Length: 163
Image 1 (cartoon, rainbow, N blue to C red):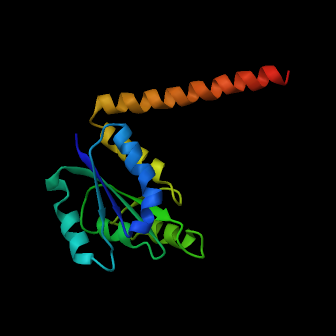
Image 2: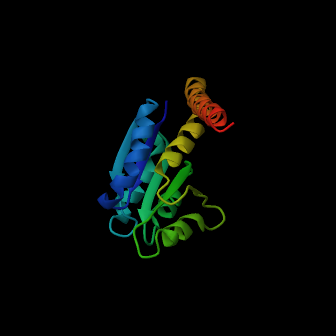
Image 3: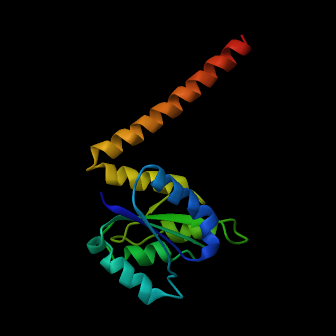
């Protein structure tokens, strides 16, 4: 199975990004975690990204706050799927990061999840890998089914209580 790379622009993003790392590991997907800045380590970010496919990476998750150029810089150097996580890291509560991540020019797509949406970024990466991995697809479906059963059980309890 392909690996997922999780890249953050700063170690201050780790508290959010850990949700993605944990989710990926819970599904048994090998994960590489790195700190590369689009502005402070552009050469290293490009080198990593340019060789990612050859190094067994199937999807890249890129998280950054404020200017949030990281996902776009990563996407510019690969045709692998890139998922951006805008991080709430400024007075603008992450809106600046969201707009920087989602507003990509034609030809350089970046899938973007909610502000601080690390768990969904991981789940989207897993869904991308599951296109060619039936066992992973089954794990994802089983998890959804379990959540559905829990909600329906809670619904029944509340419905019975307030009849």
